Length: 150
Picture 1 (cartoon, helix red, strand yellow):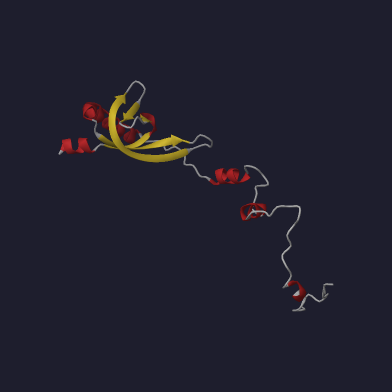
Picture 2: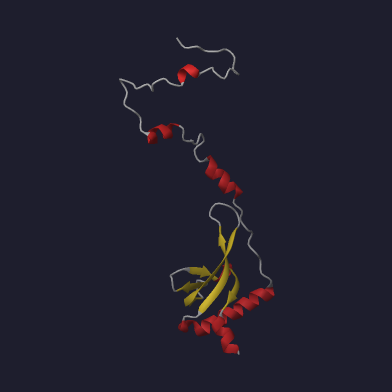
């Protein structure tokens, strides 16, 4: 018979258990370590809660309204781009991308070769088939135009 001490501070409380053989069930197969570990794996009590927290914490930026002077400067750069678009110049643009789920968005800067300027739809089409709306652009840099001015 097993001796169980009532005193929780008794250092010999479980001495009789130390040398006992490991129990092997006669009716159930031995569980693999992977399945055994899965029993103790964390689980999401509220499905999608963590994703919701991350989405709430994600920040967006408001759209910047350009001054008339800045709009005029961009317009001049678009006109310059129109003159050299056949050469597929390298163009760097910073533009606003609207967020699909929250108000606001983010500003992205790309540097790619422009292959077409669609003034009717107000878009720049790039070599990799990406498109940027002219109305979303807040800054544009065209190295080929700067070299032409020198």
